[in-house]
Image (cartoon, rainbow, N blue to C red; front, top):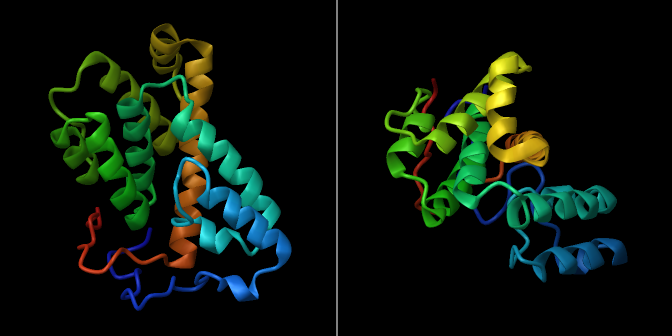
Length: 197
């Protein structure tokens, strides 16, 4: 897993796959970039500047992400908990930075996020947080879930909820991979949030 030294200093560019200047974009790249920037994300950041190298991937990927961020059947704070668990599993610094902010806005207790960042089971979780934490950590750690873990999530959030939690976990694995490979830097002055485990 990446260490805390894998992110380049922010020099206004994204590490390996820096943003493409608009003047250098193909017509399709411009179309996709405008669609992402004009959508609910409100900008072209995170993995998308790197993904524009494959505009069809960027376009289709962002549509899945738009549902998972803004339309999931899972409540926002719990959805963000699943994303933070994924970011921690991949030591995805930018992903953690961006989604920790969103998790706090959605009402996830900071103590829960801090425990996830430290790689430990959070104390004092409510029943819903516990179900999400157990499912996601087991899925990332073992690449499977037990019948008991599956049933707990299904009974609380239904089969759609199970699929939405699997999807948000998998989607943000791909985001983490992109961010880590592209070495997307944190904004200036933001300390590296995840320490090596």
